[in-house]
Image (cartoon, rainbow, N blue to C red; front, side, top):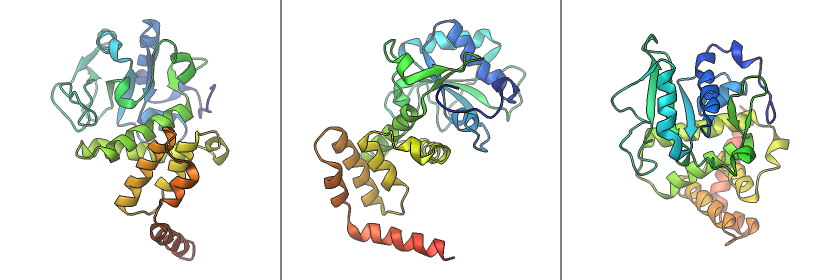
Length: 254
């Protein structure tokens, strides 16, 4: 693939019927990309796909629903932790659609259509080719890895600076962030913008909640040009960093 390597043809994945929905949306010129568990699984991480998420350009969401229904899927009524079609404020829920094949078992993954703005994924006509790419043999559309990592960081930071939202949803994004980070090489991370490098360097450490929130706050200030990376590091309490260093040393000697 253009931006990362897939372990084996997508057509051989047990969830190929779900990946194929991306091709269907592509055939109808619906701007979208695969997101969530399927990204991590495609990269080779041993993660079970609980649901198959598709980030869809906000203005194309209902058109995407029509296309998926035409493939023999039906919408699942009711609310869950992540999808609430009446949600209007992120991150209280996703105002999306959750669908399954009529013959699917109760435990099989569903296709979940979510507005791309809730994923912080820019899918305008001008940015689609910059932020995403097509799998060369299947026409499934994926986000570029560093663009996707930046989107996950945006969501985590937003949730940290605006507490009180859907905790399960916030936890899901944090897990996705850590899974994705485990799939990326240190050399790849060198290409991140400065504010994201700062975030990645600190967010995975054992830090108290107040310090973790400061990391998120400083990441935004670096992006806005209000503070330098050096100044951001200096504002992190030394005591918090020492506690993390002690914890890491104890793990190395255990």
